[in-house]
Image 1 (cartoon, one colour):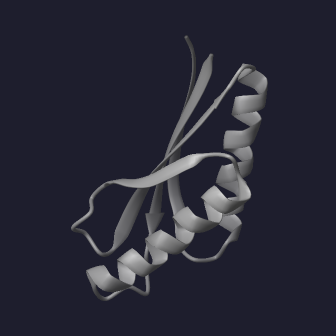
Image 2 (cartoon, helix red, strand yellow; image 1 turned 90 degrees about the horizontal axis):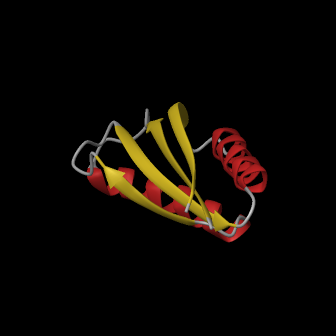
Length: 95
């Protein structure tokens, strides 16, 4: 079993409140999970309205495929235009 984990940090320029942040974060997560067979959630800095951290995980049986899916998710999220992708950390582990 191969597990891919990615943590993406987004800068939110047009959010003035946590309600605005929640709206943008939910749209990012919903679009990622509806397009890809992946699990995603907000994982850190939940009380800061200027940025959000989203964790994504993918499970499969080939590490090259999992790495490719994580790359595609990163590119997709960056091109959505909902927020600026600031950083992205990826890890692919075999169990």
